[in-house]
Length: 234
Image (cartoon, rainbow, N blue to C red; front, side, top):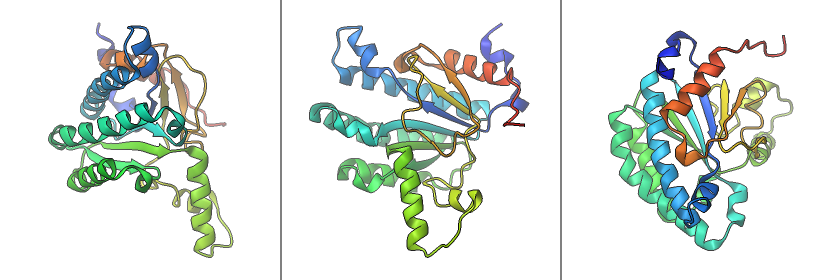
């Protein structure tokens, strides 16, 4: 029986977050430059978004570029920004056909102008879609998000906060907390991703590098999630 057939549509996670790791190691294992791994990773993004949307998942957050990634070589960062712009321009039609709404999380205004403008244009184009929300975390850091939220609270003159009011100050307040966090490439760390939102998320780690993560691997993660008993500290 195909793994996807084992899924219970009534018990799917509403929001899945993914740390897409392993592009560079995938490329290195094949004697290719790092950018080849990032290009291959784009194909996985297409496959995973399509599968998640059609499966009935309500929101998918992918960790595309962290605030720490600026410390990589200028050549790699430049290639990533070019790839980001080219991908979002070419991918907007497919997202639209899938009725996917695009959301952006992070310090988007600090991205290079060509990438920033392409992203904002796609976000505007897709904002009326009513299907799955694709939330792309770009120039994103979990600690930075919390600090930015705290500074917004201070600037607004708030004297006291609770969890609900603080959550409304985060980058994507309309999204529920992730039910499931997937990390590829076998690394056992959260890498400054959604530190506030993943307080009670289920974690799933696979040794598969991101460029090899497709529908079958995603289905395995979802089946594993559905076999768990979520107690949330109770």
